[in-house]
View 1 (tube, rainbow, N blue to C red):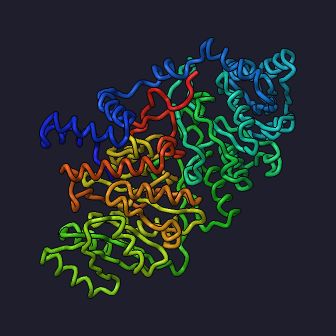
View 2 (cartoon, rainbow, N blue to C red):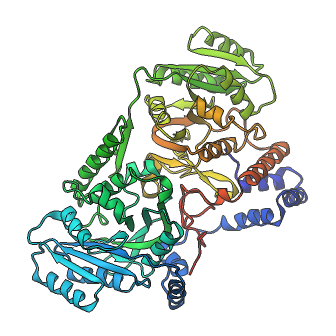
Amino acid sequence: MKVMLWNKFTHSVNTCGGWRKALLRAFMVFRQEGIIGVRERLSFFTRRAKTSIAYDKWIHRYDKWTPSAEKKIRSRVKWLVQKPLISVIMPVFDPDLHMLEVAIESVLRQVYDNWELCIADDASSNPAVRELINSYVRRDQRIKAVFRDTNGHISRASNSALALSCGDFIALLDHDDKLAPDALYWVAETIINNPNAALIYSDEDKIDASGNRFYPYFKCDWNYELFLSHNMISHLGVYRKSVVDQVGGFRAGFEGSQDHDLALRCIELLDSSQIIHIPRILYHWRSHERSTASSSHAKSYAQIAGIKAIQDHLNRTLRNATAELHPDLPFYRVRFMLPSPPPLVSLIIPTRNGLPHLKHCIESILTKTDYSNFEIVLVDNGSDDPEGLKYMESLGLDKRIRVFHDSRPFNYSALNNEAVKVANGEILGLVNDDIEVLTPGWLSEMVSLAIQPAVGAVGARLLYADGSLQHGGIILGVRGVAGHSHKGISPNDHGYIGRAKLLQSFSAVTGACLVIKKSIFNQVNGFDENLAIAFNDVDFCLKVRDRGFRNVWTPFAELIHYESKTRGLEDTPEKMERFECEVYYVKRRWGDALLKDPAYNPNLTLDDEDYSLACPPRREIL
């Protein structure tokens, strides 16, 4: 999709007249983008040499609770126009007494003071548990407790705690975890700034028995497909109590995934704008031998309950789909079903003088694809290779293939826009001619997603020839415009919190293999033909997103992408000049949206595609 800025700069130095020409190109950037553009490029060169910062050092620099930070937050609390009551719900059963004490103390130490702690002890066998809880009830009138006569497990215990609550919002806290001191302040501020908010969640990390923080999860904003893959809300989860009451609270029989089940039932009543993400670590999840924070296998029953919860949600929302365990991760996979008969798909493949790759591409589609109802619209962009022309002529014997000739100068956007006009399918598949099919179900998977309500473009998992990842979704803002998520990781690498192998939404997916309804393609007027080669897919997907559709990436459609083998690299002054113009065009159109990707997190870097920590984060630092 793009060429590394560093490669372009050094190429200018080495082949375009040395440093004088390189400086001239820098001056051209200055004329186009001003001093900010030049600074962006220079800072990129210096950042390349920096290694990823360790999380403990990152905490010390950007997330440490200091007296000055506390003073700043206390001052803000005083100026809040309102102070919503937040009920912290804590089910308790035979906890480690020290960990329980730490959990309760973390609520008492909240800078925001309008809270209540509702504790339900689920008939703990250790009498000291009741004694400890009662000591806190006597200490602070905001702490309430109920002691159940019989053990009913976590869902019933949570409902007992919920019955004590009086707040408009409830926050969930496990009996051995810990809240950050400013957690409830940020929740209260979010409620005030978003009056319609009904479900709020934050980033989280883990904490060991010694209090050391590790394994942070910096989450994206609300992402429905990712939420079907795993419980991305989890901690700190905050719910409008009226919504929780409406769905009937926690359900027995879903223990281990009761929070996931609750959230699934709540989101069915909400608009996506009512689900708000706070990009801060507000919750520390205790890691010990019995916790799921320590090992996903510690509570395997939770995964079984998770499948049940997701399947129930799919059934309630009338989606023809099945939930199952993920083949490689302790998460989930949802398979959406195709209608019978499946819709006609028009696979549009532009090509020029690339016979070996084109032949490999066409044959892999014809022989390896298990989806039967498709046509291939092959767009020849001025080929003059006799063997290639002869091969394309032979393809006309296959009723599934039509060949069109378009001899204009190469413009990816224009070629596809023109081909769509003659496509017969209600579903479009945009495919590069250097693609090779790996998984027979690739098209079935992508089409099954593309036909879902509110889904726009669907992207595939594309690999380099050596098996490393080429495309895992597009992250906006990386090195200025956009980059491929997890680019270059090995086949066995699951990526950041499994995201290299989980179904999820992204702001954009690559045009090298993209499936979308023809009606949506036409609704956004196709590709912008001002973007002949670079970033036309990013621009297209953002137009789709702006119309209210979700762009989805699936890891279950795998293909090899022999990237740029047909068109070649950006290795001439003319190509580099065109590339710079397209960069400027996209930046001018989308502006700050490129730096605020809802499928990413401001605590993660824009210097690379590896989800390493941002230094500094793109959020306020106390």
